[in-house]
Length: 193
Ligand code: C5P
Image (cartoon, rainbow, N blue to C red; front, side, top):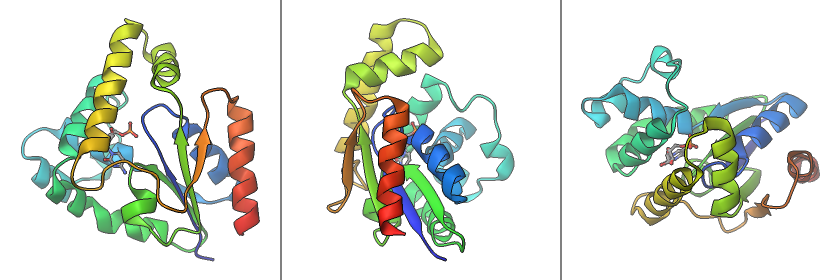
């Protein structure tokens, strides 16, 4: 069975948690595509060369989850040649037999417009910053500023800007428990299977 679930949205909206939960529930493979951009940003040097030579080792680095790595990722993610170098791998992953969930910014719009289910997960910047702050600590106002800066860069770039695909179901998790958000995603997938 070829079946793709595309989950897009801004940082800390709940995409990762929802993606992992639905992948486990339906037995689908899961790809966190943000990790690809984080690994390119963390590798340093020429980002296009880094994207073209990305290895499993690069993806296994322990420092990819930091705020700084997120900012570095969004800076290299504006470069069209970086995005192009990562496209084929993501497309193949999306259409592998057995079903796949991909979460990112452009899965439903660019990587897999033919995805059977498209979900756009969002929440207010304040709620997302608070969630991220609970994970990383530090100064919450600074985390909010980082979230806003990354949103602006991801939504404002010319190539594959963050936006909901036309047919995407919008899930605003600002006032939702994670269980309710997962249940909504599961219901959508069940209806499409
Ligand atoms: O989702 P995550 O926060 O790990 O993504 C890090 C950055 O990578 C994003 O802010 C975005 O700039 C970039 N990204 C992207 N396209 C994707 C996934 C992530 O441009 N599909």
